[in-house]
Image (tube, rainbow, N blue to C red):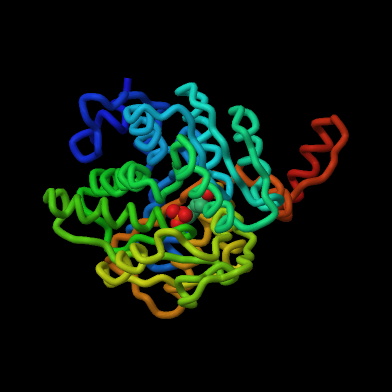
Length: 351
Ligand code: F0G
């Protein structure tokens, strides 16, 4: 059996003799070489880190396995989180695996159907609130301060610890850190975790360079870019519809220490990148993941030269998470035919 994330990286994680070592198959996700987009942006070495290949279809599982293991080690008996969808799916799954009741507080009407279906199937207690993710996070912070419930949002440092392993894998696969890392930014835990991971990889001498961190928010939910809280964040990429990121300051640190930038992309740019990823690369990601790709395309169009550079784009979640949006994409060719092969043959010859 493949070595688990907790086992493989135990020396670099807060794992002790008392930490339960379990795995649902998180981590060890593929790094796939781009063809189409690499050509478009003039970069020979562009790779996608496919975090949708984690057990619940997003990067959250890397952090969740550590957070839940540490919760159990500390005698915790139940979990809670706020979420735009993926954290709740992951918490609910690990809660179910470990037999811990899980409560998720989510913004009503703003969690995509695939993610909600997961939380339902895993048997979480789902509380829908009339309000944003930011409000839900505030509520769950209060809830877990006042009650013996473990908070498993990325404000829990064990989540960041687990998520940093994605950087370790990138360095392991490439034999070095990339020159640039493109990544979507919502609550800003993941950009924080990647930067921590790259810095540790550098200190451990697994890489002699550090990447520039290139974060991207959606235009309607870009508090870090605008330098101010967004009271009513709005974007088609519901996973990053966040107006007051919990890890705001560490995202700025990652940006500044790495010499990178945090920019924003419009919903149209996100949708263009989302479609291009699927029909150009064969990689079906969720819209929030496409925000990083949209950022890459935008930066390249506005003069960033990627020639001779090694670039990694983090594809944070699977396209199947948001079936409603997926079904809005115009099919290339979808028509009804009679159950008759010769008619089908005839039609295909016309193509
Ligand atoms: N991509 C996806 C698919 C996400 O689900 C998230 C965050 C992000 C990117 C942004 O990562 O918050 O660490 O900056 N989803 C959280 C959730 C907020 O509740 O599932 P971040």
